Length: 361
Image 1 (tube, helix red, strand yellow):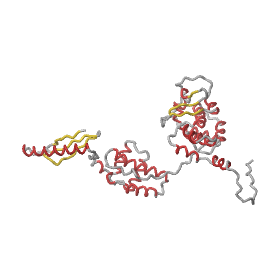
Image 2 (cartoon, rainbow, N blue to C red; image 1 turned 45 degrees about the horizontal axis):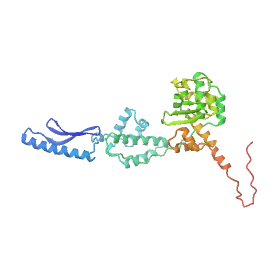
Image 3 (cartoon, rainbow, N blue to C red; image 1 turned 45 degrees about the vertical axis):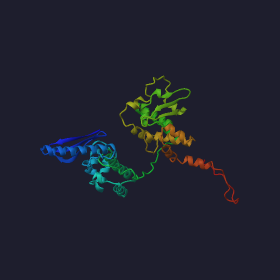
Image 4 (tube, rainbow, N blue to C red; image 1 turned 135 degrees about the vertical axis):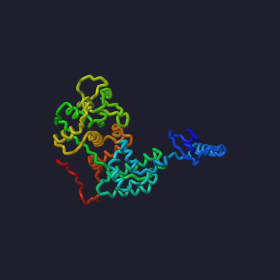
């Protein structure tokens, strides 16, 4: 950290370095060549330097780049896109320009963001989830501007996001899993995709964790259990392997700890989701799904069989129980079972006989 007086020609500037950032501040003072005058000018420059040092120590100095803060929202967004940042930003750019992308970064406030939010929700061509993504993209640009010290404050802090519609979780039933198990999937890679997917339906692993799963991640005694650090969250999960899952991968051989359980799946550069789609169609299953469906299936089947949501959450490696609660909404099975467990109560005042509901044949 430091503040120094610098000369550019005859003009005097403050060279300010603090917090890893360097900036220049024009003093409005110039040397004339007259020793007496220049001595007084340098005295004033030194006073300005001392005051700047005091402002930095007290946290009052604003290091924002006043020049860069005057660039338009569109211009800065395009720079972020060139840097491959922003996720949905490239597609959102069209709407940013249409609404008013020529606004300067330093002019964006909560009011502007709220009006953009209202406007993009009214665009008939956009679904609500797409509008939510595009609004998040705009907020990302503004946050980046603040992070890069182009603007003094982040106006997105108290902004209400567009609520995304709750996604429908596709999962497979016991009957559908049995259909898949009975349906062959050709080729060495296809056979391994089938094996890995069915295994995932019983243990809830992501595709990234299936690809990195080694035999050393599986503890065989007293009962098989996966003890693994997840690729995505780095959380360590412990997932018991039931007999159905163990039968899928157990080949009766002794494997080295570093050996991959699904080596072909790991080595393949092919998009293996296409294998799953073809397999499902061959089995007569109309649902469209990919690898993550196996994780959904594990969660739903576990909850339907009475496993408490906290335990399921831990096996999935969720850090927030609310993430797991989505799966509880994915099936009506638990709701039906809950209603069946209600005690029969005569609510007719004795005027009608309570006849138990017959089960379907």
